[in-house]
Length: 577
Image (tube, rainbow, N blue to C red; front, side, top):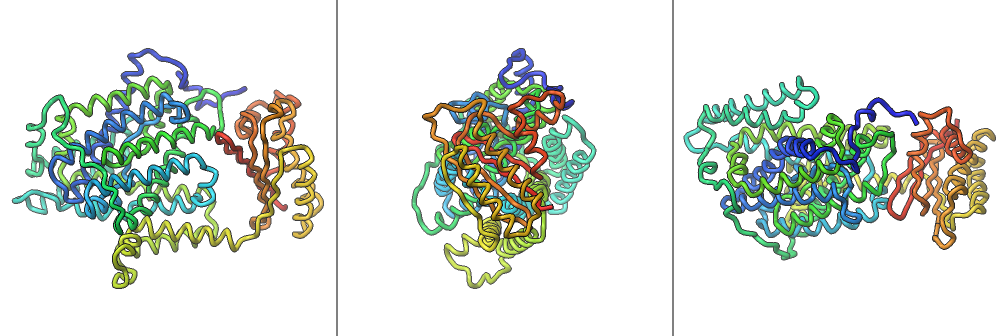
């Protein structure tokens, strides 16, 4: 098989072992790139909530420990938990707004309970990712991601004026401006590995500028110990399921699902850059990554700190270096664990002035807006999807800024709707389900996966084409595409044992005049997307069992194959013309 030029740069695949010195160096490099975000996020949340004292030390310590453990779990893959790839784990900026609200409403105990329960929801969806895709469509996911800056940026703007007594606001504004201009300028000019260091360099320059204006207080750094446990106490978990808990829970679940989507994207991307041969995504790896993410969130709830997620910088570093060995992930996780026991190191980041942290947050969180736009556009933005996105953003921003009947919102309803991610996300889900309900009805066939089912499905397809006045040529192409999928699923050349239960659920519906077909079955280990992708680069190699895949590639306008532990989902679209 031919290899793409991109994947020829892979020096070590996940199962291969490079020299320990190389793995250690890359692990330390990735730790240096990401540690600022891991520490700064809980600092921003706790300071914005107005909580002072030793809880901040505990939250930072716990965040580093959890990031280290989950990064190692992602690399080592414990059973079904973990991706088996280098996936860097760290605190999630998406949780800033909801965690600030929870801390202000009920303290660390309430936040911990909300994180724990939302982590359990994540485990449920991780085991049933095929169910999640019907509700959290790319349109819904992109809309919620775009609403994250709407809820977080007011917190960043509030930090612009967080200065000590005797410090002029003009000096704070200059300090924030210097930081923002430097970060933005460097981000626009940087290339390659330098781009990964932009946030860290920007924060450093901002702290130097803050020192000139008297905004940088080095007292916490001097007082912190070099080595040891932080002066802190575990705040515990408070399961007092009152009105505030139930009002905030939907927001936490919504953000947890957003984190899952980010983890899914990163786990697909890391597979692409970790192999020498081109492969489609293996969703068993995706599920393992989501499980590990859920473990991190569960531990975050137990230890009462900010939840975590995967960082895409691990994908960038792996692509740049060509080293995808799991050893790098092990050293990276170990580095976080070691740093957790150096309180003076963490104190460096806790001392970052509010205006500098605000500038950092404005760039990092603001970029999520473009991420959300890409998620929506990549799925195809037609008129109906534009209506869903536009209306959901309007509702989310309206409730977030208290512009939609604030006089009518009281108690739990106010807590529920006044978070833009919750109100906008609920709107997007409702409109998507409404579109599904008002759209063409799905025809469904459920039976065992056997040869006789081909004729049953063909009869349904012929009836579908006749009712819509398809030409005979188009109807034949539709039936032939379906037959090739079924022959591939039946796997005549590598049939599973007779006692293996294999059921099929086939659905068919009209989408803008075209036919959308979906096959859900329990089959063997071969991934159809992988095989089709490999066939594209090997026109000279032709074997009999590849016939179905080659025909399918020309009959359907699009083919997608999602593989889970117990389920394979094959979707294809056949055009009428």
